[in-house]
Length: 194
Length: 180
Image (tube, rainbow over the protein chains, first blue to last red):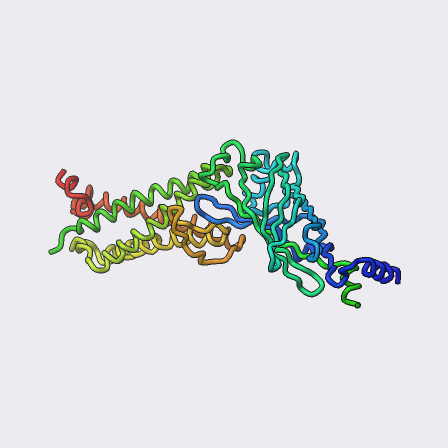
């Protein structure tokens, strides 16, 4: 078929085709964006129900990797319906004016042993900050799983203004954990069919 | 004959009475506030107070079991004695069940209790919204049952003091108030 031909042509054109499994197809059902925040010493778990990701990652060429993530902030589950409503509001995410959080990777550094350091720009509520997130990559058959985390300081993005801006009730540091599962595309088919 | 309560029993009685009144008033006030930093703070304080009271009540129960209460007046009718013992038993039961139900409710609602923001208590139940709502009703019902009993308890004490003119009320008062 056409697909096979294209794949074959691609594989032939690439000098390191054998390693060129490129992970692009996001499996949203096996991906998650979770976070942990602290409220007067109490750890609370939350997550986002909706997000979209674009990825191109080739373990052989990590420096060329690219990741773009858009998180639907109104899809937040912060542990209770009261909290979800509050967080969508003006003082927190202000989802009416700023519906999504946007992440775009800059550099991806390989640290060895399937560990990487992903740097990029995170934009929430009109404010952009540089973030660095360590991540691991675990190949699983035809797909691969990226697990990583970073600490977001909500104050940097004006998440929680007014009465919430002090950090004595809801702490500034928010631990964000992501798991992105992607399946490899045509080129890996060519590789495995070799 | 043992005519009065021990100083420890008297202190625990009044300390817990004060604590229960405070936690009750706070609970009534905070439960339908709109979400705000103040609300989260009050909830934490209420939960810390509840766990502290649970500990005090367990200490008090242990004290009571090892230090028998002074006898009831001989003039009391057997049925009234039975009622008194039942009411006191129920008071103890509620004082233990109320903070426990609050703890369980917190677990079911997904808000762990961290005593004074430092000591995390284990969640005795998994997160379950329906169970959380049920436990909220349980917590509320137990509290109003306690309020009802406490009113009866106080009324009985006053009846003993002003009508029967016995020492039932004064033997639970601190020394300096008793002489009055």
